[in-house]
Image (tube, rainbow, N blue to C red; front, side):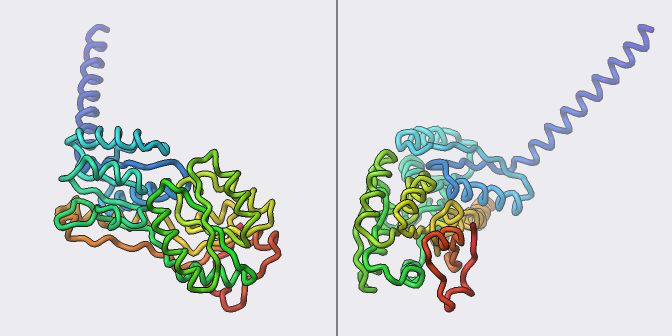
Length: 321
């Protein structure tokens, strides 16, 4: 009996050691690269960019990459704290930053290892692009001319356009400046409605609804984070809301000719793989532009507002509800 127990014990020990060795080897093989991901805040667009990036990496690197993910949850100070933590971790091969605040924080402390960016509107204006920069990736600058043309086609009676954005977001300001010029070139009157924080949203949106025919929002973190509330306020006032992030149309915005952030993240992953494999340096890769060719329209909102899609636009539209 004792002999049997000893044999069983030895067998189990050998099996356990073999199992642990096998799994340890598999783990080592799997984690060929380590990527640090710093996300500015939680909302649909930025989550989609993160998920698209990770999915793209795993597809291209056969799941042999591990990701360390931190979310600053909208806090600038927290973004810098995370960036410092990442900088101190020498096991990280590459950083992926999502949206402008995260990118500003990471690029301020890390000057050597590659930083791949996404959901940043104008990295050049942020001083990130220079000879031998360690920053590259994708932007989310939309085709403003085409978006304004879409607005005019969907809301032909509009004369005044409220630009709804966050005053502290440099990416939003950059896009709003382009939008303002394009609206004026089409004979429309743009009026700024700047949000300073989430507590301002109701007052600013209600003020805009009283003064303009239609609202237009750039890619903006606070607008995206509060989109359900913003939509409820605009619909209550029977005012169309045009956005620059396609995903927000599913939350009730009338339309967008904007960015698919999941694809934007995947696009960034292809750039990251070139860097991880040592095929390119960041300064050898230009910032790639996001695709914004498709129009998304919320059919339910369209009907509620009593609007119609002109025949010439129908073939370009994807309806959501």
